[in-house]
Length: 142
Image 1 (cartoon, rainbow, N blue to C red):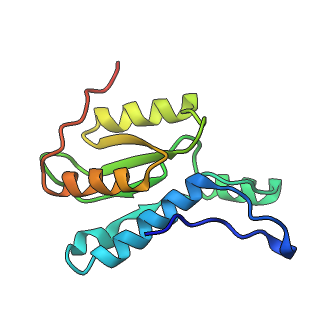
Image 2 (tube, rainbow, N blue to C red):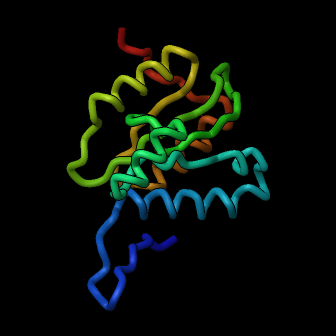
């Protein structure tokens, strides 16, 4: 599968949005693979990232969008866990303080949580491994 790039408007050079491309590729794979494993139909993205105008950001906050929530969720129990959350990072991007808090809280409440860097296929492998019930996540930090 080819890495997706974001097209710019008005004939400009495409913007590089590697995290978005990772997510698009992951969801393209999940859609194709959901015939073999229907649990993948439950995979969803959380619309936390991206640049927004103030009004849109305020509306989303009022609707319950929260800073730090991981990018991708698979709400399917497997291997003794409640579900799987993935945070996608590309390049030099690092976890924010809010993200680190969310990741640790989710782990403490019985979810598998992982951070995937620069490789949507790694996210795919984590999901496949998780669905086989073989995942052993690191313990949450106090």
